[in-house]
Image (tube, rainbow, N blue to C red; front, side):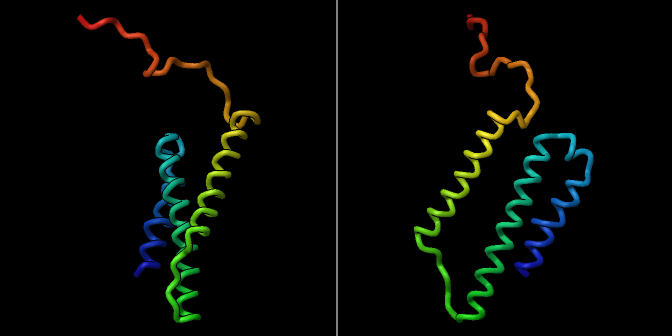
Length: 110
């Protein structure tokens, strides 16, 4: 049951969404569809590794804190590497800077 949940909700639906022009033309939809697809891949790897480990060893597996910290560090390094790639390798086209809503000057309230 968990396998089918994983395949249908976290793989098939995002792949179908990636074929939609509505998703491909909207950065917000594209971002969340990609996040769901990544969650599907992570869920698949966890499902396969833990299920196979429990089946072969007949033991329960709970990751230790160093494993969790290493995984967190690898993900953080990927985020930092992507950020530097975007900043210094001109990954996205440059646009004129817009004024942020936080720094926008507003008229004084009366």
